[in-house]
Image 1: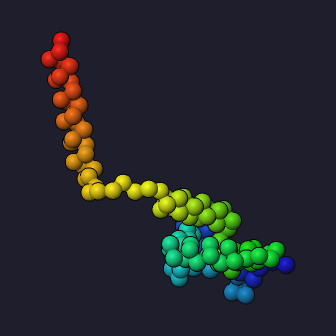
Image 2: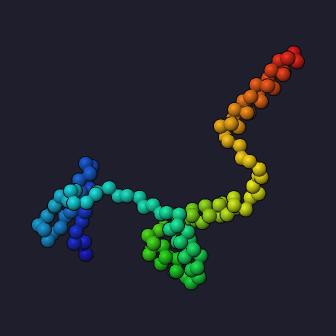
Image 3: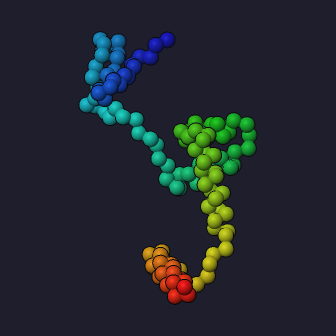
Length: 124
């Protein structure tokens, strides 16, 4: 059975709907955007979906969740991996004391290298 409406996109980004009820092809580029857009999930959405996936215990529940949320298994695996890395980073020991500005750290390292080089030249 053929679909009632078929949407075609040609090389010049013109969307054409072929609908036999309308008598052929109709240009619909002006009525909606033709480009597919990648779906982006916020951090809160990712956490919510992962929490729901963790609660799935019966066979087929994760598949139903992925269909409902419009997510494939690959991003779900990536999000789990990212969550594990973030959890491990949060548990890692933090260096105590004031933090050094990275720009200042670079300047200090350059000055230290210059000092070492001048001391080596003085020894010669």
